[in-house]
Length: 197
Image (cartoon, rainbow, N blue to C red):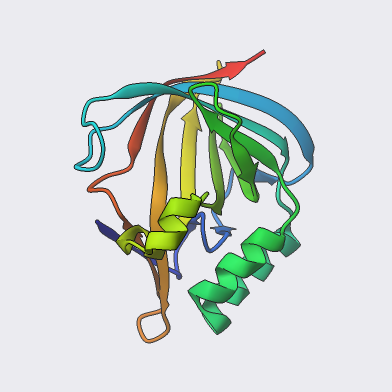
């Protein structure tokens, strides 16, 4: 499923291109060191895997990505394309980690927070872990190598979100748009998101 994100705009989100561009008043961005953990129930409502299956997802942020890191990723995508973006993202120092159902998990490479009033929006991205079997067989999923997530929280640290485990990213210079295409028909729904004390 494809979603197109236009670059010009007031409060614009593109996790993978790492472009969190904000020009509206009353909105703050934070890129300082932090340590926060969140837990959620992930519901698979897509056409891939077991539809309706529910599992736990834990997200821990140890630091926020800097403005320079965001700009590096955005420029890399726009000037050099998806392959260069993937390589640059992998070179970024970890900002935390994500894991599901008590697995070991994997490093997050990008995380930004936007606050507005009592609410918060946390966007994170990383490369997708590829198993040796997938790498050897080279199925169509190999084109979907990014993982992108978003948490929306209220003032009490509760909320919901989305997690797209396998995403393809493309920049269209003619239309100045970034296209995100999910391998599944829709992202995982993150329910009962809660900040862990």
